[in-house]
Amino acid sequence: MTLPSPGTDGPASAHGAPPRLALVVIARNEARAIERCLLSARPWVDEMVVVDTGSTDDTVALARACGARVHHFTWVDDFAAARNAALAHADARWNLVLDADEWIEGGADCLSGERLGDAPFIGVASIRSSFRSDGITTSATSPISRLLPRGTRYSGRIHEQPQSDLPRRKIPLLIGHDGYMPELLENKRERNARMLARELADDPGNAHVHFHLGKDHEVYGRYAQAAHHYQCAWERSTPADGFRHGLITRRLHCMGRIGLTQQAIDLAGAEMEQWQHSPDFFFALGNLVLDLAVAHPERGQAELLPLAQACWERCLAIGETPWLQDSVAGRGSFLAAHNLAVVRRGLEGALGAPMPAAAS
Image (tube, rainbow, N blue to C red; front, side, top):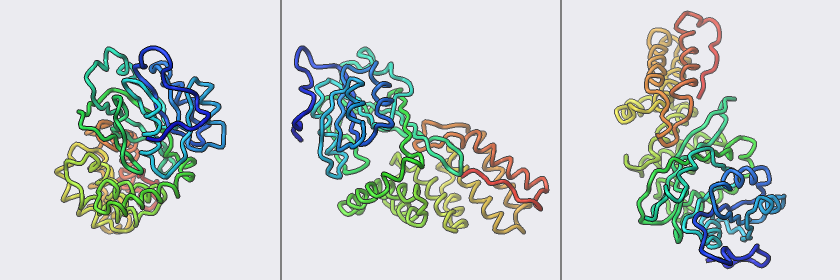
């Protein structure tokens, strides 16, 4: 446990019973977002604890103005260490963990005392992350453990997880996140790559680390490296791993980006039976088939474009699936409809003119 630094805002509960629910946040140079985070949670919590890891902007002043107690922690390239230091400053029965670039979008009624009850569990919230791809802003939703009973601590240098044998329970809390938007990613590039490399060195066979390394390379356009780590993650993971849905769709996408289109289609064919319920899977497959049609126009109109059309029609038939981990909003609706219009234009004979770009 890291002891409080000099100059912090005082003990967690100087008088009376411990608070029921605390918001616990770690932050650094988050003046852009810290108010949004704290104000979204303030009506639902009894105290707010912010641990600052070295801000040089107004993060600390803004957090205090929102009513948070602010403590300080020297950053050691370890998210679990920082989160555990923050949790040590909270004295509540329950802790709600948010990042500074997150905010509560809905479902906060589940945080009431009546809904939480007395039996401890790990609450799994839905994190909806916004991102931009090919000029289109959309989002993907992932389940992440964010409601923790007192005494729960984290492990893992990056993409850390709470360590507990308590049951995981899905709660209807929806958390927004905009930290993956392009204008915000640059500041994280070197830090994340460095920490993930250290994690992989410590545990080279960890499928989850390979998956996150692949995501880190993909988001910066390093598709060959991403495809390599996705393959490693695939070989080391099992169908029971929750991240397999995001892994298969990301792996197909990156293989297509580096010219392994036919190999990706073959992989999709082998895996298709497992993903009949996933618009993301058929969306990625449709893009691969369209790429193959562009590369082989002699097969395009008669063979490949109808296959791409069938993929995106399948997406629309399935619809949106926000309960699937890493499912991207729109792949069961507007993004699939856009791509379907693109391929129908080709099928209607306008092949002499360039087709509009498909969404990816």
